[in-house]
Length: 225
Image 1 (cartoon, rainbow, N blue to C red):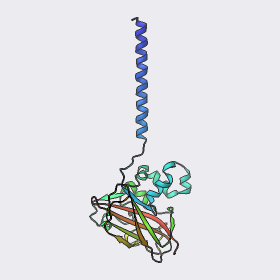
Image 2: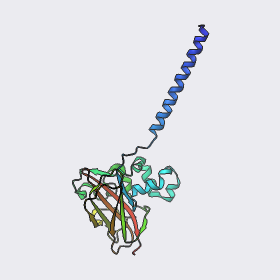
Image 3: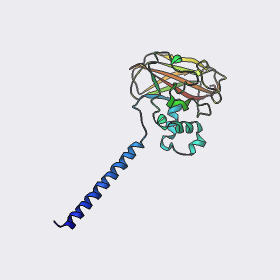
Image 4: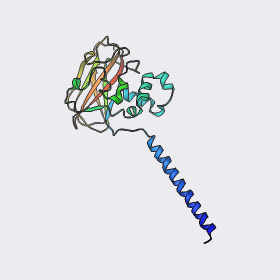
């Protein structure tokens, strides 16, 4: 084989190796840019929790500048930690020992005191859904954990979630249900009494598979009927 032929083969092999390295680097970059998604757990999906609502409305276009104008509270949450919004189903604490008031401080109820979800505690005009005063809370249990119990709280009349931080003293326990078997969706009947206007519905779901508790803030406008 001539030296010229050898040089051509070496050059061709070098190009192939370089192209392979470039393709490998490209796919590695794509993988690094993929959002970190938690293994399935769950959340309140109706009325939607803040984290689920932001994911549901904007996950297909979470970098859209229109969100800043149309949905500013979700915008600041996505900007603070996009992975927290992708992990809408991972807002839980381990080892609360059935004492949420001790485990979660005032002013941090919507984030369950977890730094990555702190944007959910921000006070402002969160998107709210309108409901009758007798309504259902739906908890989606993707991992089929089941429940030891659910507790549903609603803010007292006069509390303004657009200007006030949420604390335990602002809530009234209105519904508590015991053990529920694993199910994709669990619906809980709730009576908001004579409340009207904007409120926060606060749901605690104690999973049955371990000492793992979930905390959800849902923004609701009660129509008084």
